[in-house]
Length: 196
Image (cartoon, rainbow, N blue to C red; front, side):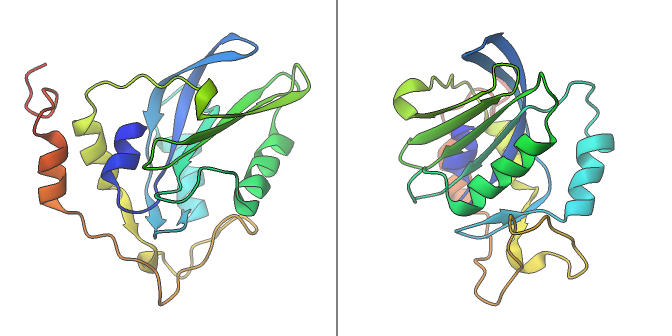
C-alpha cells in the first residue's frame, strides 16, 4: 500500500484480502489493484467493469473485506465522498461481516475505519494506531500502475454508483508514468532486480 501511494502521482485505489485475528486486530495479507481512472483528487471505475472484476475475474475465492485509497498530498481524513462510499458498503454487509477502509497520503498519514457488524460497532483511528509492514513491492507497483488511467479516458457509457465517483472533465489530470521516477523507486529493491 505504501509503495502504491509513493509511486503513483495521482490518487490510486486498491482492495485487499483480510484475516481477522481479534475483533480489533486484522491482517491484510494481499492487495489487489483493478483498472481505474484517476486524477489528483479522485479515483473512479467503470462500475460494470469493476463489478465484473470483483465478482468473476479476480481469480479469488476469498471475500474482499478491505478498500484503501490515496489522498496523494492532501490530509488522510475521510471526505464526504469517502463517508458516502463507506456507508453504502456498510449497508450491504452481512450481519457477521466486517470491512476495513484505509486512506493514506504521501506524508505517511493514515486514517482507518473498521466496521464490525457482529460487534455492532465502528472504529476510527489515525496513523498512530495502525501498523503497516513494508516489503519489496516494486513489481507489484509496476503492475498496478499499468491499471491506472487518466480520468479523461473513462468511457462515456461507464456507470458509477451514486455520488461516489466523479465524471471526467476537461480539467482532469493526466497520468504520465515517469520511468525515471520508477527507476529511482526500484533501484535499491531486490524484488525489482529479480534477486529474491
